[in-house]
Every structure is written in C-alpha cells, then in structure tokens.
Length: 464
Length: 87
Figure 1 (cartoon, rainbow over the protein chains, first blue to last red):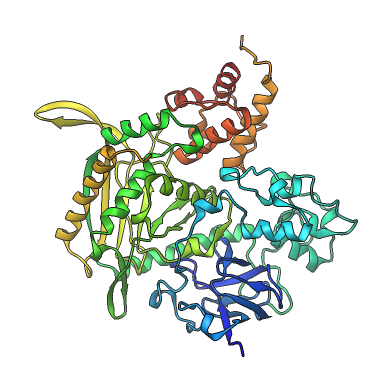
Figure 2 (cartoon, rainbow over the protein chains, first blue to last red):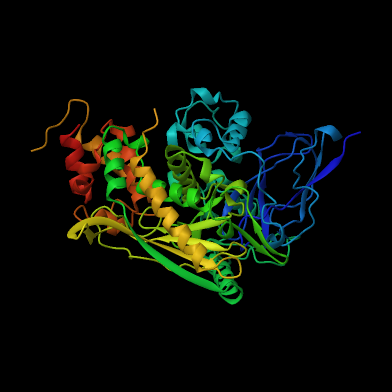
C-alpha cells in the first residue's frame, strides 16, 4: 500500500509569509520526480517555478490557483510508490512552521545544478513541448548557454498552428490568462504589450481598473497587480530589515584588499575566451567568500530560538538587484566546493532567472550566509570605466543568518608597496555579523582568510 | 565610412544590438533612445548585464569583443560602429 505525502507551500525567502499557486503544471494522476517543477507560485515578491522533492503520483491538488496560503500549508497530496523508497528527507510532513525555525526545510539533498540545466531543458519547457508535441532537440535555444526557452519553442515554427479559439497557444502571462478567463474574454483577440507581443494582465479589459480583482472563492488577501508588486516587495523588505535591526546585535568590520594580481589573471584568461566563457571578478569574490566562510563556522549558519546552528556547507546567498527596483537573494548551494568557472555559470543563470522572474523554489532556499552589493556585478552601476558606485557597504543581516558580506566597487587607489607609493585595484570587503554568534576576533580572521583566498585565486594553476 | 562585411549590413548590426540590449533591459524603448547617450549609465547596466550583451552580440553576429575594447562600446552609436567595422 503506498503512503501519502503532502506537498506543502515552500518557504522561498526569509521574508515570505504566504504564497499563491498561479498555475498548476501537474494534474491528478501525473507522476512526479525529484526536481520537477509542479507549479508556478507567487511569493508576493516574485513568481517562482516551484519544484517538488518527492517521487510519486499526484493524488489531489488541494490549493486553488489564486488562493493565498501560508508557508507550510498543504498544496497537494502525493502517493509515494513504496514506503521503502520514500526520500529520507521529506518536505512533506513538516508542520506549517515559520521559516525561521526550519531554515533548511526546502533544501534538496543533491546540489542544485543550474550549470547543467542551462544546456538542457527546463521542466517548464519540457512540459510545454510535450503538450505541443514538439521535439525539443529540433528547437534552437536563445537562452543562456543555448537553453531553449518557452519563447523559442513557440516561435520555432515546429509547434502546430493553434486551432481557432485555442488560447493555450497564445503567449500570455499566467495572471493574464486567469483574468481573461474570469472576464470571459478570449486571449487571442487581445493585443499584447509584453515581450514579443505577450498578453499581460494590463492588456486584459476590465482588469486594469482595480489591482485587486478577486475570484469568488479566493482568500481575503488582495490579488497582486503589477503596481502592487513593487509596493509589496518594498514592504516585505522593510519588515525583514526592521526585524533584523531590532533582533540582531550587529558588529561591523572592513578590510581593503588589493585585487590587481587577481584581475590581471582574470584578464589574461578572458582574453583567450569567447564572452560566453569569461569570468567576472564577482565570481572570484563569491568563490573566496564561500571558501573563507567554510573555515568560519560561527559566521555560516542560523540563529534560532534554541541558539546557533552552524550549517554543513556554505549555501551562499547572492543579493541581485531587480530592474525596476527591489532585491532578491537566490542561493548558490555548496558554493565552497565549486570551481570558479562553475560559480560564474551558476551566477549567470541565477541573475538571469531573478531578472526574468523565473527563479525556482530551490534557488530561494535559505542561504547560510549572504553576499551583497558585488560592486557592480549584480547591482550598482558597472565597473567598466564608470565612477558610479560606493567604496564599501555596511549591510544588514537577513535573519536567521548571522552574517552578511559586502563588496564595494573595485577602484584604482593609492597603495603602499614596500615603502613606495603605487596604484592598485582595491576593493573594500565588509562583514556584518551577529554578536550573539561571534565576536570581532572571529570576524577579523574571516576577513583576512577571505583576502588570502582571493590571493590564492590569483595564483592558483588554471584548470585544464 | 564603415567597412561593411559582405555578410553583415548596418541594419543587421542595428537589429542585433537592439536584440542584445532588449534581452537585458526589456523595459527600455530602444526606438526612442539617444544614440549618443552613455549606455551603462543610461540603461543602468551592471557588469553582468554588459557581459550578457557582449555574449549575445557574439551569438548573433559572430563578433567576440575583447575585454580591452569594452570601453569602446559606451554608446549605441559607438557600439554599432564598432561591430560594423569588426564584422
């Protein structure tokens, strides 16, 4: 007899309290596998492709699209094939705990592998291709690393011509689809204002006026409109920042590091490579941070009600600024073990997903430490000849993490070398840390270790 | 006075540049943009965005812009001229 598991609303951000299923990608009777994207969920801050980490068959979908449910609320029932085959790690039976008490709830056991995904097909695209009867290998990919995007699929010419009235083949956002359905309007007849003529919510008549269009049986939380989202992102961030300031006794340390050797090493390497294979200094900053954090357990973990829990590896959160405002911090899992090339590729994918609103739930699992303001790599104006940006940042820690690392702009600065004045490319690294979990001595050692790791990267042998 | 490659016209380059920029900044209307405005500031590109633009241009036009030439792509006009002459 097979056991039944519950697929619950995943926690996708320290500040996430509730979410709503925008669109189910599975139906009762479908088989699901670990890592499959089963739904598109709105977390208030972002629309995310939610993955499932169970194997089994969908028994019932419990959550209605549009219904706002708290983190941990049951979304679907899954029949596991056999008791003995159940995953040892299950996000099914956890109670509806607030994210702060179960920080690694949604972490998959295996490494997230976006670097491989980039060259293959995302579950979402596979799902579409199956539905349309298209062989994905024949579709040219215009996404990162040649990945096939939904848009590629639809414009490939391989998909059958939609029959009149088949709205499922019209390019439209899930929200637009729902609004159109609710208003009794056919998508095909609408003119889309989104990318490549996609129909967005604002294009659906009778939806523009109020940003709180409700389904008859939706929850009392207001339906998100495009304008509302910016406000909600701001509010969620504000609440998290206020809480951090209130609860965490921060201490701050900074260290200026000479990156000249590292930068010339990267430049030398990049000169021999096409753009798709080049490394940004940001990748090196992240690699060094992860490797240093692996040696500083008091800075890499979570402060919970019962005290500090050091994390196993370094799941490095990377703050990425979004066009139009807002910050999201997706995670590079087990970053301490990744090579520079791998981190660069994974960073590229994460930034692309963050900015195109296609993050996966595993991208938003709780980091063990976060890096912010990568001096122009993921936020402030570019370092390419621009003088914009700041020298250093004194960040605010995202609870329940206990540290946050910041990097300012890499700048040419006067620098003393063996008693002589010269000019070097220097970056200011800053550490904000929770004084309950560590003290200045630990923090200082972390920063000097980070500087050493950066130096190691400048001189290590190139991988073959 | 640009050297037009037999395979690549001014128009092709303009179209590719537009596509590459729209990819990183989909909300910008490149129709109305000032050809001589500083791109990085004007479009608010960070170094990841810029690398993505350069990567897209390589994919679309087969032109691999070396890092040392990045500062030469500082406006739309400069970018187009560079790509046409390096095609």
